[in-house]
Image (cartoon, rainbow, N blue to C red; front, side):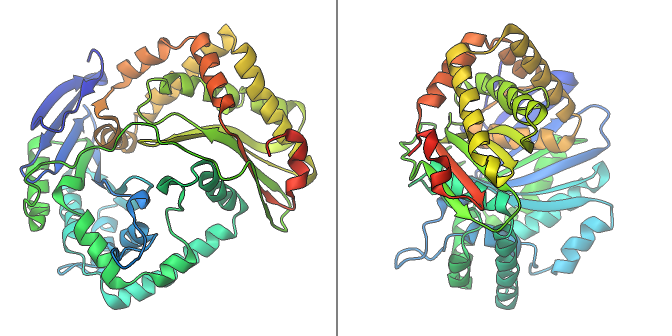
Length: 451
């Protein structure tokens, strides 16, 4: 495959070869459902995902005009496992346990995915069961109230984890005023306020053909997959005469971080720090340079932050950088867990390392090592059909193009030290946010000049 392959929404059928002799095919069904497959030679299992292009950012909040409370998308993900007109919750679980398969779901800020990994011979069963869940869930009132308690326990568990608290406050601050800044699971208040009718309406409006992408990778026969998906989703009808729903805009949103320093006092042994700023959107051409920057700064044991903060100074056990890209916004940040009294010093070291990157860039050796690390990890990840399935889903929903391993490696090889330095300068010029959870106070970080 030479170059990335575009995935236009008005192209009903596509087929092309990918690296490693894989075959990628895509079919758009009459109602707007998109079916993608990547057949991998020698595979004996397959991973399938039913993606719904609705995430927590799409919730409007309960009001006179809208009935879906914040957290409804995640609530719905739980409820779809609780039974349909023809299957109980136990039936759904038993279907996969009986064949040694795995199944689960995940709600994100921009989509929801129900997925399973099974032997090739059991793929039709997985399609049928997940299709039944998506089209025919009962949202039983008793199950609704039971699951409300389960989700409240899940939120309580997250609130007891200082790293989770730091993460939620970080996204809320960096993406301030944007729906992406809201917690995916909602809050205890919005979950208690959620109604069965509200979630049901959210279900019926969101789970429609134009919003559904089915991706499968591994031992997959595309024609059989299309036939099975068509049968499994028949209950939805062909309601979207316009075809697939348009992709989200890739134009970067205007963000206004709410605060420079956010501290949450907790009586714990360690301070959890997150320091960062808005980053590039998911489709930004500089995402390859961002990957290199992230690798050099905090992407492994040889990274600058790991060496400086952990190896040389012994200030933290865990320290790393990360990047999250969404359709119209992004986040770049650094996490560190350290003794509370060392938190100001660790935060200062992170800022110093960012400043050095922006001023002096990276060395040729660092560039070579980062490209090697990213190339190798990408190749190893694709040994797993889960990763290939996720790549297909994100390519269709977010990227609008499919880049195989060879194309990804080609783009990585084009990154220069100048590209990384320029991006570091741009990131450092953006408003910076520091979130700290633990026995800390705003005044601990006053010397950093963030406020």
